[in-house]
Length: 501
Ligand code: MV4
Image (cartoon, rainbow, N blue to C red; front, top):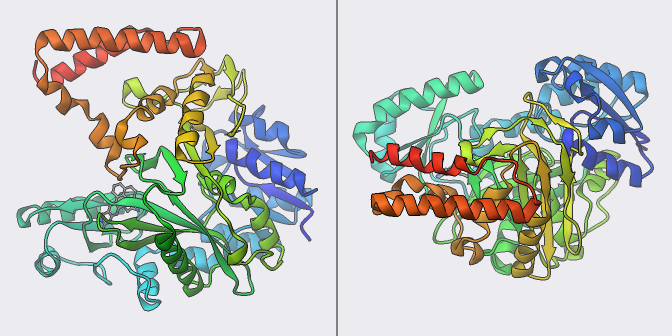
């Protein structure tokens, strides 16, 4: 039995986990940094303890302190959320050594799947399709050249310790290999302290599709369908949805079965996500396993009716899965917009400050998971995600209509957010028709190419139009202009400089 859980996290995900705790009659324990004294997760929890100063490595990443608080408060278990210590096998190990339950996979599984090359080897043995590539790290450009001659260009250099696109380099021709290899190595070294690089065939404009799985400790594994996460910017997801507009029932069953195989092959227990790349011919390839609850889990919750945090807690408490694959049914369509405190008019720079007015959208089919309220200050120290806006509809069109309405209803004053960027995205024909890829944002928002087609006069007219539309949009959405409309004119000027006009 689990009666009290310490949530080793902050913001929207900490609040999200505590909500399920409360429904289940489980007491929640918050931990917080000096920057989060009055944060929503601290207010929501049944008890709260100060960890230390604002920087994460003095607060949310201090393993000893978190375990000490867990024991002092009488917690039975720790939920790590996502980010911070969620995929740190040492943390999971320490939690268990101290007689506490880690709500997540076993430390050994986290370590194993954290090594991308080890994971590929396991999956290959289990007949899970992997991207054609090497099983060992390369030590020279000579080996890279040999590989390229076998599978053909383009090839991709990846960090063995990798993830998140760091240390990744595309090589399109022989002359680039040497330089790209050295760059990938040094980037991998500084990001992971591990410079090992291996090679894969590079897939052009794939989709990122992941399968949610649940596994209990008795070997039962089920999948909860896919999430399409192709809309991302610099390896940061922006929009996720389920089902994917391109996945039909046959492909869902096939990918789902493969994900279940992947989970069984790695001895996986708890909730997890198996990531795949889907190429333009609908072939899918294993990418990696995320050994945590993911940011985008709500879209799966909305179409399956399940509470994934509840399932995680029950699994961690040693219960058997109460559902078989035949009990899982998908209903309707869900889309999530991540609300980052970033300024889309200023190269997505983090926007910090105090939210002096705040109103969340609501109504039919709208869910908001957030970690902030009016009067709160968004600190500079952590991830810039402040909320997630999720809509559900009978079908994709309805989920989109509801999202557009909800984005218009959302009022956040005092800081910049990417809400205006989302509004533009939802107007794009390729988005509405579901024509997505991991290069979507790059292709639709890289205006430096677009502007080359225009004359000086056209550019000026365009700038005036952008200012006017932006101004009236902001006024309509909030009844308030928090940003100088001149910013967009500056943006156009910058583009003109870029293209030497
Ligand atoms: C790839 C790929 C194409 N071919 N691997 C990026 C993050 C890392 N986890 C894997 N990634 C990719 N691996 C091969 N062989 C393209 C990407 C990729 C990507 C993947 C998922 C989501 C967004 C992405 C954006 C650019 C590239």
